[in-house]
Amino acid sequence: MAATYEPIATTTLLSTALGYTFSSIPNTYTDLVLIVQGSTVVSAGDSITLQFNDDTTSNYSTTGLYGTGSSAASYRESNTFTQTGRISTTQSTSIINIMNYTNGSTYKTVLARGNAPDSLVITQVSLWRKTEAITKIKIANQNNVVFSIGTTFTLYGIKAA
Amino acid sequence: MATTYTLIASNTVGSGGASSIDFSSIPNTYTDLKLVYSLRGTGATTSMSALVSFNGATTNRTWKVLYGQGSSAASTSGSDTYFSEPPAASATSNTFGNGELYIPNYAGSSYKSANSDSVGENNATTAYQELFAILWSSTAAINQLTISLASGNLAQYSTAYLYGIKNS
Amino acid sequence: MLNSLVSVLQGGAGAAATAYESIATVTASGGETSLTFSSIPSTYTHLQLRFSALEAAGNNITMQFNNDNANNYVYHYLVGTGSAAYAGSVTATNKVVIEGQYNGTVGTYPNVGIVDILDYTNTSKNKTVRSLSGGDNNSTTGEISLNSGLWLNTASISTIKVLASASFDAGSSFALYGIKGA
Image (cartoon, rainbow over all chains, first blue to last red; front, side, top):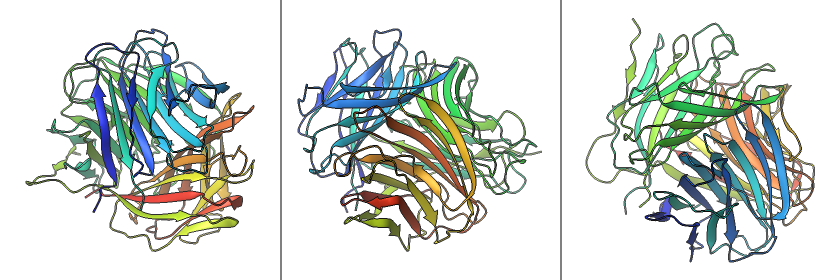
């Protein structure tokens, strides 16, 4: 029996890098789960951004809910990039669910949890306004600065019956 | 191919309650840990702070939480081992919290960051929904997890399940 | 003296069995006001429901168990709309909310969510639901929320009904997974 929850690919940065790209993502799963753990050089913290299938246009938007440690707030941005998770100079963790990623009839919605302990605790929902199946994910950050050595990017697939 | 999502161990609190739940000798053969928990306290309050220590350490910990408590949203932070706010004896009977704590690269040599997503419930206005950002500033591999409450004991039928997630 | 519990570690040689398995998927053909998972096996410890749903703007998605549609439910929510962060509660109601408000245009803007129900067969515990869900439509509002729900019943869950406050559009998909705890 095929496994329900499987790793697709993983990488650990051996040198600093602006991000990482997963290509040739198989279309045999239902949802994707992306785990990003590591740090960057932006001390105030930064949003992790995703681009799908080399779409560099403004076909993305995000609604977020976050806590700073002293206040709770919500924000949204339209016609921009996705903001999925959070990273900062201390060890940070983001769990990003890309739901129904092969559906050829709907846009793609992403559900994310981000944890940058010296920055924000955050959850976001993001939209990519394309109906094509996702085959490529480019991971970067909003300020386009490097991720630190040791940052890991891991992609899992979840397969529904 | 190795199994990706594996139960490492489980605990159920028996009659009389327990002061803590402990997972010891956690193997270092997985990539991430996922602790799934359903807790209730015995103290005479509506809810109680739950704590989780790594390797018995209670220092070098920081956390931030975004939470709702039934009427407003807020955020706070601290430096103890707080990670959840389950119901306790003054909450609706037979009612337990529901949460998960995800720790990536728990056996690696970097500091350990974790997400805890936790809800309590209660047949009243006040119950907590919480999203935590947790940091343990230690390069040690995690080989022990211990859950306890800030006051009182864990009630009978409280449960915790530790899963290993493997990235290859 | 109350003693701490020490875990019982899984032992044995050989590859461990996966703890996470797919149970069933239900997909709307369009126009349904609810979708149901019946005869849920009792062989797991936890359930996870992952969904991608389409319905008319302003509607929500709720859940009932074992065909109980009486006022035996409570729910709480923590919500961000893009302009406000707030929380609230509803008691003595006939369902729990798992997704607060659909914001998109039917057909293309899915609202998604991940719903966890722990210890669903434990007959000593009321059933507590946790749901992280949301949707965005590239407009002035979106919604992201952490919801909790309580079914005031200790019965083992054998049926889950997911309800649309209006109706589900074709392609709305709900996938149920079982997670083993022993």
